[in-house]
Image (cartoon, rainbow, N blue to C red; front, side, top):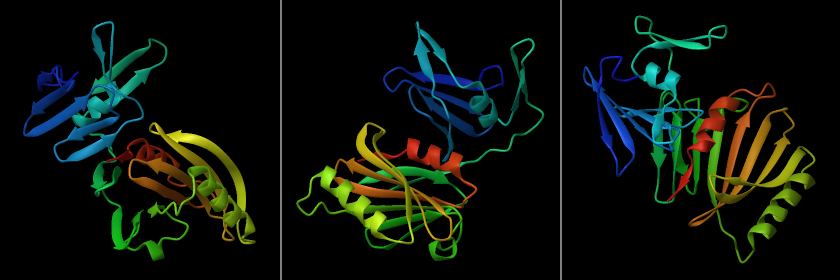
Length: 231
C-alpha cells in the first residue's frame, strides 16, 4: 500500500517494524501494535498488523489515511479502493507517560498533572469545567496492607454506600494482560463512569472514564485504554 502511494519502505526484522517515507513524512507500523506513528503524532487503530503464513497484513484504511488518502469499500465486488486526491479526517493522538505508565490521548485534549498522584486528561482546558464531558482520571492507589481483592471490595462498598451513586456493573477483567476489575456507575447528574481498578507493575491504579448519559467519547476511551502500558 505504501509503495503504491509513492512511498519508500524499509523493514526492520528485529523490531518487526515497517517504515514508509514520502515528502518529509515518516510512517512507522509495528507488527502486533495498534498504534501507527506519523512523524511525532500517532493514530490509534482498532486492529493491528499481523504476519500470517509469512505474509504481512496491514490495516488498509489506516495506512492509506496516514498517506493522506481516503478508502472506499464496494460490498458488491468486495473491493477496497484508495483515493489519493481526497484528504481524510484523522483523529491524531499524543503519548503521555510518567515513571509508572504510558497512555495515548487525543492531541487536542489536555493533560493536568497538578493533582499529585492523580492525572487528568480531558477535552476541556480544565478538568473542573468538564463535568459531563470527556474526562479520564488516573490515580495511584496505596494498598495499605490490603490484597487486590480487598481493594476492589472496599471500593465497591464505598460506591454502593453513596446514595448519589448507582452501581450498574461490577466484574473481574483484564487490561492489556494485567489483572483488573471493572465497575460502571452513574452519579446524580446521570453521567456515566467506567471505573477500572488495575494491578500494574508498580502498584494499583484507578482509571476512570467519565462521559455524559449519551455515552459520548466511548470509542476514544476504548482506544485510549487499549494503549495503556505499565512501565
